[in-house]
Length: 220
Image (cartoon, rainbow, N blue to C red; front, side):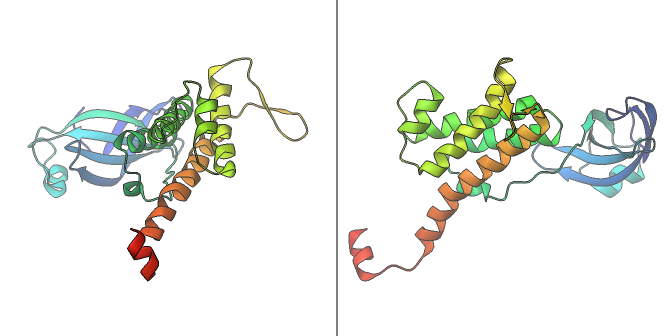
């Protein structure tokens, strides 16, 4: 498909072939693609499209649709825009950081099962870094030196994943009503993991930047 400010596609939100109207346009230096969001005229759902082109200039791209080989690369629904509160640059391990970022990407694009899987993977990567020796994730969490409250937080994320991975693993509210909302479990997985990273990394960063007493300086 060639570029136009108005395009016709099957909407992944309402499963209807209809017109989309362009909203925002940016160029990504990481994947070297033009990212353009469109609004469905039928259901108002938002999709994100990615376009190949021989120009990185947005004005040139839009002004001359046939001159720079503008071709649609991929499109998918933009479901949410959940962003972490923790400063990702403070998560020093690249594997943990990438797993957490992928979990967020999965949630924002409606892949809730994958979100919970990647959140669990991020926990296990983190436990390995903390020198956990057990193979079982529960025991890995218990064997680390993190606080009791953070351990409970991580166990809850593990439970959300267990609900997805094991058909016979159920979760309930306080009145013993079964809860089956995987979208909510995915969101909670990210919020809990976000809080864990904030406590583990942001506090360390604040302490490292704080002024030191004479005794503290001598002990460093």
